[in-house]
Image (cartoon, rainbow, N blue to C red; front, side, top):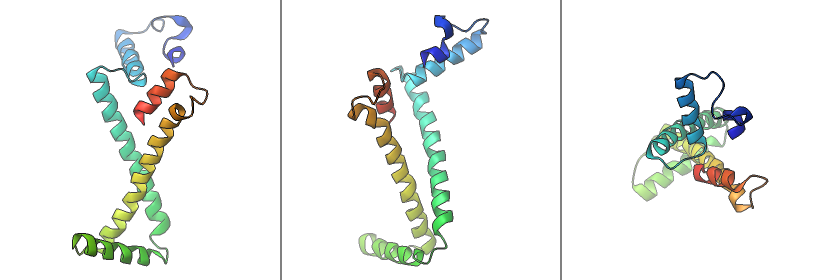
Length: 139
């Protein structure tokens, strides 16, 4: 990563404007997951936006692939029964289906987080300890 942001071992890019130098420094601090509050807040906002976009993509994909399947009626019936038995709520079929699609998106989010933690659990997988730690913090 440092080679990408500081080529040829120089502190900054040749002929870089102060704004570009600040942006490069800021991006580097986010990628290295530095512990400054401003970096952590920016990182949290970026990750929240990224996760939201990915969840919407997964939800829309699952909805497109399953909404017209014959077994979907059974999924909705079981969901309505569970809402009625556990929460004493009468929920519409559309709401039950939306909950079901969102469950896949949430599972996908947890799957991605688990993948980011794997290098720490498996001894680095060829990554440096610092890089594995950064991935684990993002997971």
